[in-house]
Length: 108
Image (cartoon, rainbow, N blue to C red; front, side):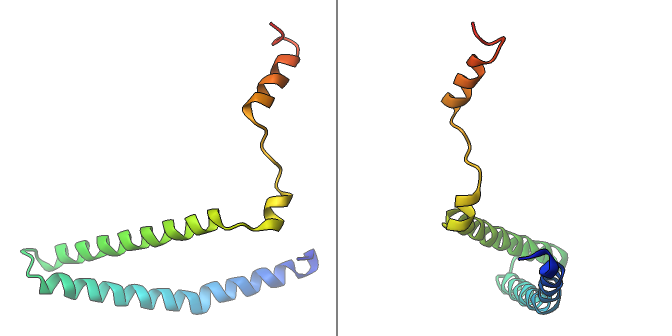
């Protein structure tokens, strides 16, 4: 994206992230919390409402972490050729060691 259009693109990404995505995610979390809370209450667990709420939040946090890890793995395994071809390649340790030996002070 050229620099002239960068801030317009940044503004559009911010509008999308803060507008419909925040409303959708808060709706999903409120539905998930309501579902987990009623599920925990219907099991007949010997806890009060505060402990059941904490248990529901813990379950939602675990589900969120699993989804985040899955998305991260997809991003890491996704082969995006323009990005991978422009990244600087890391040298192997053998190459680094050979260059260190060639420098002064490491010639022994």
